[in-house]
Image 1 (cartoon, rainbow, N blue to C red):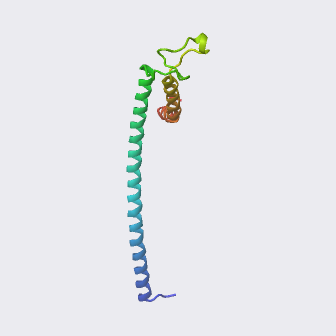
Image 2 (cartoon, rainbow, N blue to C red):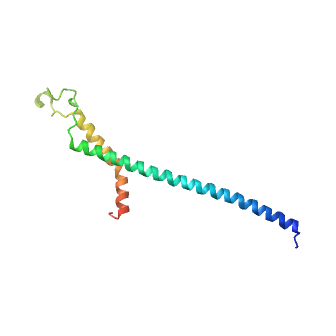
Image 3 (spheres, one colour):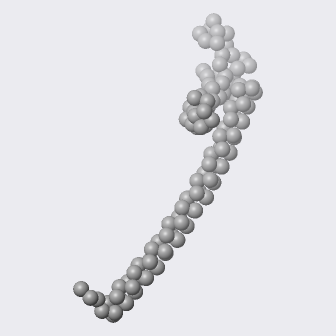
Length: 123
């Protein structure tokens, strides 16, 4: 099973070409991984900024008076009928909207807060 020099030379060329293709594939993979890491870092930064903004709105909604001036029944809060006449205590429309927004935000942030707590070893 002796191979001729030509056969061995041809095989060396094939291996060199394969090696070149693999180097290009590795470079492409490394570039993709770098791009993925950069996108992940940008996404994490954006998530942090959004979480901070949502928490700021929760603080505003929890600690500030947000009123529409209109009861859920449609009457003006200022000139609302007596509870004995209309059958309910006046509740500003904005109140239910604010509480609903806080609940939805808390629910959306819960998994993030939980994973952060686990990462810190709090749970």
